[in-house]
Image (cartoon, rainbow, N blue to C red; front, side, top):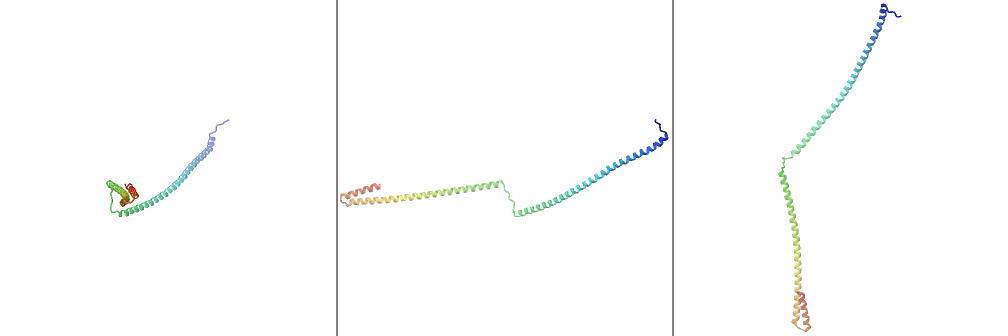
Length: 198
């Protein structure tokens, strides 16, 4: 059966239970504090690692920036050197120029017309050469014709001389008289000469 505890028992029983419960509460608090401290430590470590990584990234970025700045300064120096060199070459090239020549469309048209006129002059000269060559050839042909006509005239003169000689011979033979055979021979000779000379 159950007996109800007496107030003394309760007091005695309550006290010993009370410190035990109090000790459990104390034990719970340090665990929460330990967890909280662990989380804080982990966060601090994480923040430290993150800061180190950021510092390394910052150092790398600064190194890259310094390298790019140096490269840019080098490129700028080289570009300035090239520009100065180009200006010096331009000045040297322009120092020999007495003046600037401006060419207009009219100048170009006049030059083209001069070229066309020169081409026409060349064509005319070629035609004159061709004509002169044809005239020379014509003169040569006329000379050959004159030579042929002269030879023909000589041949006709020789023929006429032969005919005259034959006629003279026939006339002389007839004049000398003689036998009938001599007349006949002289007449035949005169006929031959007459037919050849006609």
